[in-house]
Image (cartoon, rainbow, N blue to C red; front, side, top):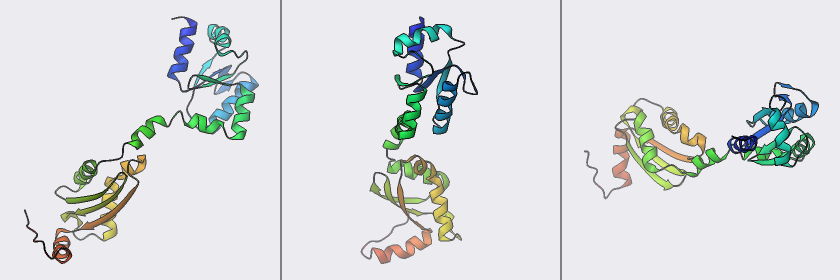
Length: 205
């Protein structure tokens, strides 16, 4: 692999990468130190190459990036600039969104898949086997009714906390935004159902 191919591979594989003098824990020039300080402030992960230990990359990169000095910061394969430009972008607020966008695709891809009714049912049944579950609504806002023997002798807040705990993962990653929850013991459900639906006969299976 040629030096140019190696550099292009590094740029392709690392959404944020800095070519610097020294390493992040011990920069060997003031400009590299300043740039690393800013990148660390953003809390966005980045890769680095110490050009002092990679003389071929140090020699070749300027002809690829059309930028003569170091450090050089690349975001998604595009040169952002050196210390002064990075500092200027950080101060005007344009750097952080650019960096944060590099770590969001995986999350937003997951978040864009709104959770299905069957997935919600499976999550609840894992902790409340044998429960009867009714789900209404679409997308990420659902009305959920859970009827379970396990609610016996539990205060309503405890019942709700238990069910919400089963949905903590999709709520955390954004696949589920809002839940309206109703919980009942089978006895309570049986007692209210005929009153709510006087024309229906409930048959226990």
